Each structure stands twice: as structure tokens, then as C-alpha cells.
Image (cartoon, rainbow, N blue to C red):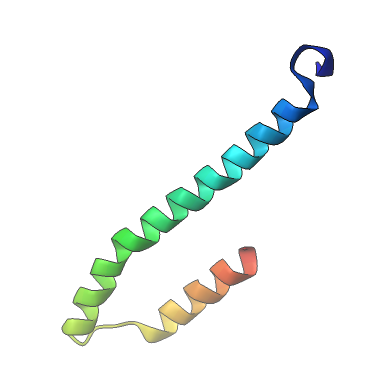
Length: 61
């Protein structure tokens, strides 16, 4: 397999995949920010849930 496509292609695909996953995560977080803003405006902001979610994301990243 290395003879056909080389080691450089494997690294290129892995880097592209990591960047794509980071981009999708940022897009998801930015789309959810409007929901959090609306909940804060109504006084329904679940602070404990946000803290747990944030700590989970930090742990996984």
C-alpha cells in the first residue's frame, strides 16, 4: 500500500480529517450560541448543564 500512495498521503488525509472535524465542531457550537442567548434572555439558562458540557468538551479535546 505504501508503494502506491506513499506515507505522505496517509498524513495528509489524517490532517485534513482533523481540520474538518474541528471545523464542524466550531460550526455546531456557533449555531447553538443563538439558543443559549435566547435562553439567557428568558431567564432559563441552565448554568450547571453548560459547565458539565464544557468540561466534557475540554476533557475530550
